[in-house]
Length: 225
Length: 95
Image (tube, rainbow over all chains, first blue to last red; front, side, top):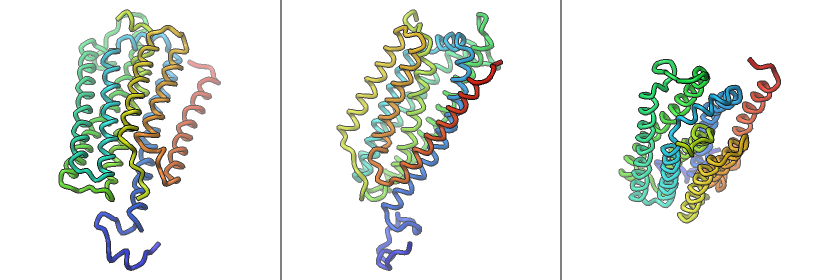
């Protein structure tokens, strides 16, 4: 699709040569991001599938293991992530409107929420570690279902671990966007990177939306603890 | 620019709805419903996920239909993974 010479003469430095218009570039960039997110959905989907199968096979052990999750930290972390998604959405909106200062402010708040999430997760991890709830390396379980509960905890560490890794990468990406926004890199007609990092951040929130009930809410016995 | 800018009010409204659903799912988990606890929890999670995907991730406002096709195809593949996988496990002798 070759455009008129006029389009080349007024070439926008943010518009890659292989795109006809900024709008086409924007659409392609968002679609590419979604293709990537689909691979991420399949990646986490496999773990969720395994988790559900073994929950079905070892129902009792799953319930037992879930009782060792901290209901309140899990709930607070869910709220923290939802707040970070709001500030991220507001940050992307600021980018669409070309408000440079607002992008920086909203994204800094997003990072703070992200770090709060990771901090709370670290408290939980520490607690599980000292309670010898890390299968293989540091494991001790009272009761007859030890082996099956170890399986539950393997899923717990793997799924929340990969989620936390995505959070850490997300914090890095958002930091980069803040740095670029500070330099005035984005405006109303060029904000693809902000939007794509936003999509990534919301995706990570999405994974947690499913992890929270599956890990923290399946024991039915929180009332006693 | 065909890009639609969503109002802050919408975003805050969606956020409030997400917080309410979180409180709801946390409260529901404390009521004994037997096997329906997990069903209810996953239904609420799916409602929350839909709000995030449609509004925060802007799928509702996407002008490029091809992106929607990519998304639907992705969900279809996830469906293949889950449905065929569960069918496999449910239809053979376990252990």
